[in-house]
Image 1 (spheres, rainbow, N blue to C red):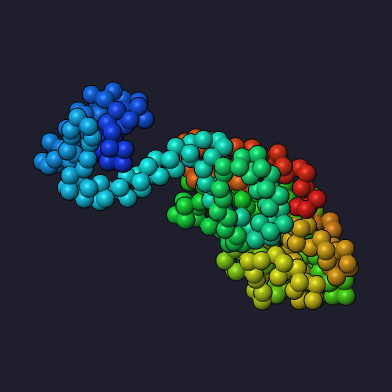
Image 2 (cartoon, rainbow, N blue to C red):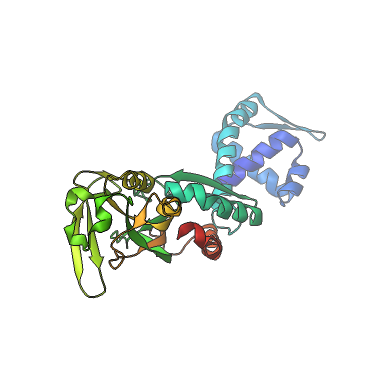
Length: 299
């Protein structure tokens, strides 16, 4: 960074036209400023300033050089600030991926509260129900409601359990079934991040049943599946936040109550950091603190 310091000294001298003032602002001695400018002139092979006992002024070459390097030095200074801020707990940018429903219903009060506590933080939020590659797509963290991740290259933190239940329309034939084994793959509406089939594993505490779901319908959005089930299209296996309103109004009912699927988890995913950067660690801690107060929205 010695070249950077020399160029920054030159630009300030070009602005102030006073080496003593430059020395005060950069906490240098006037002699050190003079040596830095002289070394830069020697390196470039041109005179940058005309010095007299009364004033310092730019040569034509000096003015051209200052105009050419100023944008680059400004960009480098901004880059240095961004990197330094990224290692502060209360400053910097957070680029976050979150599920669509969660991003609309739960995330805003968390972001507002964090922004109030740390006003110098900035956010870029991307909502998607599909899984994203947080490394390739340059996210600082991703919020997910899913089963345990299989990706061994990311880090994740389990925040809390998110249970699921089987639901169907109250007037549908599914409410009279006794066992989920009576369901066919065409009866089961699948949730898939890639809109493909899904395998349901259901347990009654003693035995388990595996069902292939999604042969006739799958989607990567739980609200779509809830609406389809409420219209009688089949049985859906969803967490409470997607079906709460339908259950309240009676458009959906809980079916096969003795049979439960594996729980999902509300999880924070991270790129493979050796240690979480302070700004990400502080947001993660705040996120975890706020979730208990928002549980009724998630269950």
